[in-house]
Image (tube, rainbow, N blue to C red):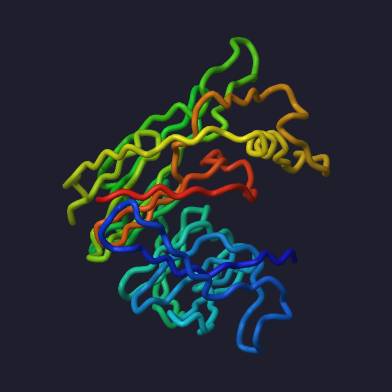
Length: 317
């Protein structure tokens, strides 16, 4: 099993002037199994991190099919979940959400397992036709964000889904130009090097926001899922550096059915377009009356998880 380093971050914003510097405090870093205490668990593949009540941090370890929990002081509290098909077991966990009382784990097989914060299994939801890229648990429904891939582009949507997995309404449907063009009669395609993404987050008061990075817009949701407020931001565009261009072109992927790996620059089907500045964000964080956008050289195509430069742009909400 490959062990990836997991990082626990505490992000603080300076109040007042929106142009003041951000401050990041490294609380704890796991870089080697030897660093772990007897109570802590190995981390296989950190996939999703969510903050819960009282400053607790929940992490979905996709390889080990486990949920790991730390307190606000960085102390490891517990791990729960196991691989399998029985009650409280998971096969393909892919998304995580934490509410005031529950922990939801959504699988790619369109099943959600629900636990309490202590890790006790509560129930399972068979959500046929619903496989969210990300989601948030509301009072009596679930907010789901999805990405659908098509030959001529990508389509992002946010939907209102019942606790039984039934789609109740589409909140926002957001087409995007991550794929710019196809070559007629072939599978060749021109791709934006810095693809847009979507995100879901809450402010200090628990209000829910959804975001679409291609339009640099956040939408504040009412309790019934309707759009209560639309906020447009002027996010500064950053040009790609030579290192970032080389990073994108050098990303490697498993060779289907043959073993080994290939890179984007080793095949001729994908043509990477760097003419678009990287003003897209992959995540946003809200603290007080400020919002921070994380801008990254690799967006939401889902091609690979690779290290790269990360920039932060901060604005008032």
